[in-house]
Length: 156
Ligand SMILES: CC(C)(COP(=O)(O)OP(=O)(O)OC[C@H]1O[C@@H](n2cnc3c(N)ncnc32)[C@H](O)[C@@H]1OP(=O)(O)O)[C@@H](O)C(=O)NCCC(=O)NCCS
Image (cartoon, rainbow, N blue to C red; front, side, top):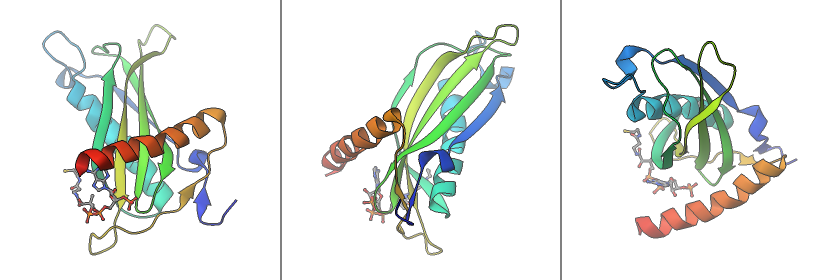
């Protein structure tokens, strides 16, 4: 492996939360915005470990909510890097929820987050490449380029 390349497992992050009433709507369901905030923090840690540098959120996309989580549920967010480009890195954040008295984990939501590593003047700087290992990592790595190209065309 190239010295300037890292495995996704080196920066993978798991963040755990409990849904409190302040995180929920009047029906006790976790608010989407709060889940995105938790995903953003987990993804920022993942990106910064990979880059070895401060990194900022440039974009959040393909956000989906699958199952509602409610007050008291335990939420686990798994953030993993799919691919690095020049200064930007795509992170996949997946959120799972479980009831305290039930061991089954349900997928609550997921999102892709694009982070850019910056220097002391807040200018983008190069980041190490990603070397995917598992079949899922390879699939996500390949699809990341398609997502990046689609987004670049849309931004133009
Ligand atoms: C993100 C930021 C550092 C990019 O700076 P910039 O001078 O516009 O940089 P560039 O146009 O040269 O782009 C740098 C990289 O970011 C990517 N990028 C920038 N904005 C992007 C966006 N909205 N979506 C996807 N990619 C984006 C570019 O494709 C490029 O990728 P590459 O270097 O891997 O090829 C700058 O726009 C910024 O600071 N934004 C605010 C970030 C912030 O405050 N986030 C917190 C949320 S409020």
